[in-house]
Length: 108
Image 1 (cartoon, rainbow, N blue to C red):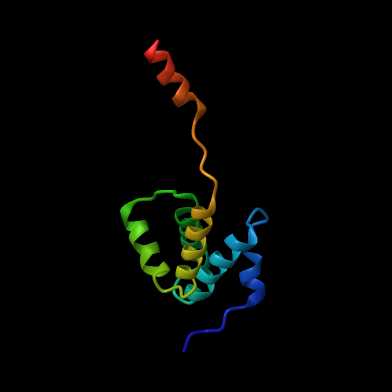
Image 2 (cartoon, rainbow, N blue to C red):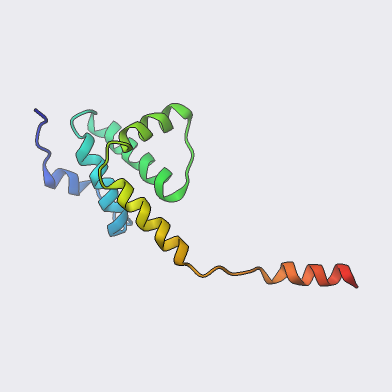
């Protein structure tokens, strides 16, 4: 049986810059895998997970494979990804003004 994780210990890992959404996802990762890794390794993998998921950071293949395997076990990750996709679809798309002016210059 998996050992219970201390809520105080998990909450102590939250960075002051992390948004509520970022923290919720990272916390889910930490709680799900707290009994599989030493604390330093777990925090490192959780940070890689957040960096990959939210910021598009890239890592060596071995790290990506390990993080993806762990992330696949998170029940709420698909909900987050769907919510993010829906938000992105609602964003206003802007056209670069410079592309139109360059075309006009070529014509003249």
